Amino acid sequence: MSLRMRTALFAAWVALYVATLLLARRMWTASRLRGPAVRTLFWNMVADVHCLAASQWYQCCPEMLGEALRPAYLQSHLDAETQAFLKRSMEKSGWLFTQLYHSFFSTLLSPLLSRTSINGFLGRGSMFVFSAEQFRRLLQIGPDWKAERLLDLGAGDGGVTEVMGSHFKEVYATEVSTPMKWHLQKRKYRLLDIDSWQRTGFQFDIISCLNLLDRCDQPLQLLRDIKSALVPGSGRLVLAAVLPFHPWVETNGRWERPKEHLQISGKTWEEQVTNLTNEVFLRVGFEVEAVTRLPYLCEGDMYKDYYVLDDAVFVLKAQQ
Image 1: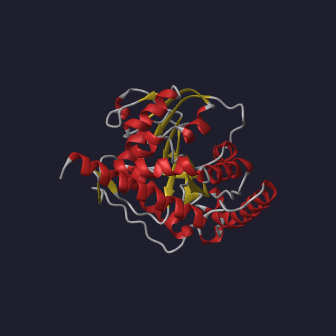
Image 2: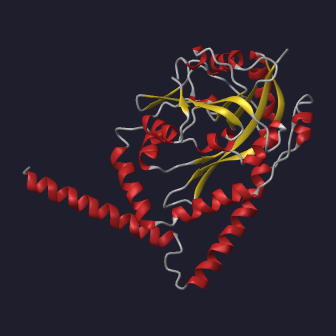
Image 3: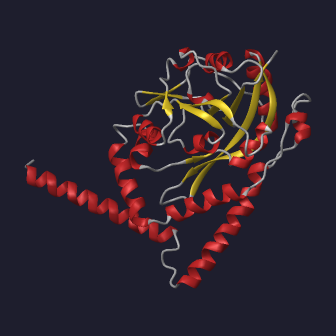
């Protein structure tokens, strides 16, 4: 096949791809709405529906938690910072040409890069775990509380790190994805190697491990390393885990079972939180100081305003 023919076929494929995406976007969004008043009314109705659905993200029955966990449970709610993230996500989902650009290059790069690296390269897919107020409430600290060092493991683009970082003189982070490392460097965070961060000689006031436990090869060893790297007595681990717990590790573009496979039992969120506490945290010498239920949010795309998973967020301290 000649070069000219291959070029023509590629151009035709791109045109068909873009046309298909445009048609899908036109069918599933409010792009046909005319007039600012109508659009404003529409988006206000969408926001009300989203807020009503979002109230279910925080539901918990404390009586179903293990007896030792009940005093540690904190009820969370949809707050202004979370609503602002949802609003931004819905607005960005409506940026037609930006979403077409993202969709096209995601398809093009998917055979070469992980989804995380693609998102980092495109500057999309930001995550939201907790607001600044929710973070302070979990740790029982005030807005002016300061400590020496924070380490955020698997920090992504640093958006969640920034929520915590204002309370620390030094902010460290680890990340596997090279494009995400670029974002962390732009934020002036100090990058540590993923295989040697526990051997730096530093001890940290807070180590955050957010939605990483189900994506690492040796989660029990990770928890032991974190425990040894915390400031004795006052150091705390802030850990978020997606429930139901489905551990998989991405290796060279393939998803595989981790070497240490944690089996978290229970049919309900409360049962899984209790089992995770008893079978994992206590096993490596941590006790739960606080726990809450929060949504793990991610910016959406042209098909969905945002994506949401069910999170349990813990504050853990080493047993004395």
